[in-house]
Length: 186
Image (cartoon, rainbow, N blue to C red; front, side, top):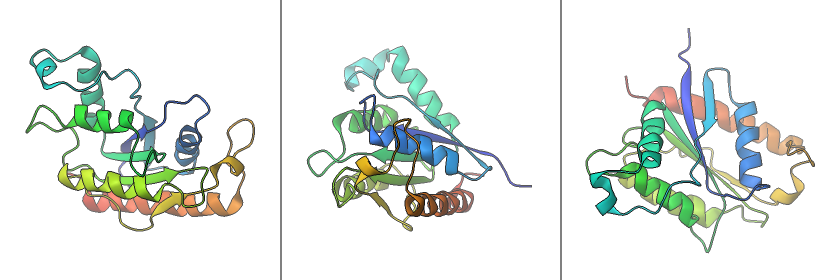
């Protein structure tokens, strides 16, 4: 019997009609039954300031607890200036502190970058992976997911309409489930 795994999904865009949020919902629908993806919201996280960690804000404590409770993490991010959006970097920083008590440590991860452009957020995808190496998040290497031309992939209700993209993402989520089982903490 397969173990059910909770996956914390972080969306690097705050925009209401974000392609990345639509993609996160699509990925959740395409996930194998053993995965239970849930979006962990990051918009309310105040900017990380080590001085505040003496008495951390409740929103930081709740965020860290949600990440710790997950078996794995999935990042769905746009690319801003060849990197990740500041709001996502802040969430990573909040979750990684206080030093030595990172909520990310050892959690299998995957990255999907989504962009209206043709190269699908390649820069953000790779830049995020650099931070995740330091945070001890074993990130799935293959398949890589750079989803370009995002404006043409969804209908008005936010449903994924491109069959080739759906097929690829179904395989991606299957591979991620295998990656989690291979790398999950006992």
